[in-house]
Image (cartoon, rainbow, N blue to C red):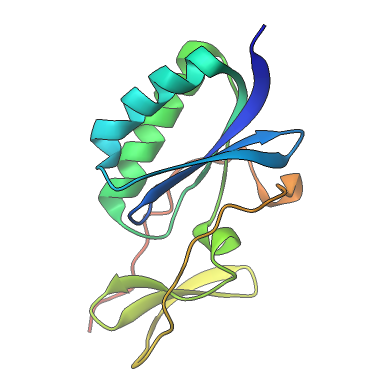
Length: 153
């Protein structure tokens, strides 16, 4: 019998990160520098031989439109095909609420619970980390990608 786990993806930046969680605790980490569209099918083929995913979770933005779109389409399809719930949260959960690069000097920032864009002259590097323990209250069944960008000026 395969171990029942939750699979969490952060595909907004390279390397993409996949966390395998048992009872909300991180038990395995997978990273890849390859493109999400190339590597996700291969990684999930390997994962389903080792584990039985019970939930899929992902960072639904903000960030790279293409990375968000690829992750969403792949996970939504997999979720429907395997009849597994898909949940999402914004990327700020994984980078300690640090600004996330948008375009030029524009960055996504989270003020209270609202995501906005702000022009910043200098910004610390935004590092995304798989949490050692998942907080279920941070995830929602509203999984549509956060495609957002303020007016470029």
